[in-house]
Image (cartoon, rainbow, N blue to C red):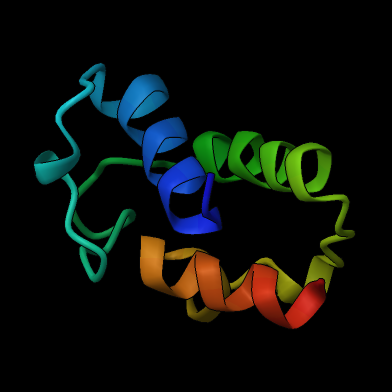
Amino acid sequence: MQVKDEVRQYILKNYLFSTDASALGDEVSLMQTGIIDSTGILELIMFLQEKFGIEVADEEMIPENLDSVEKIVAFVARKS
């Protein structure tokens, strides 16, 4: 499965309680829309680290890296 699909499925299942991929656009801000809060970001980071074998440093925990499916996929690609 592609990184984008896995990230989208994780967010849909754990935060939107849905399996409908169309419920979450690639560029939708996860924080501004209230899909994920600060605790959710930490859970998302743990998922990314476990699933993709990357390390997320404290200074990388910023919206530019983690605020949308598109930004998360680009971040994982840079870290891999």
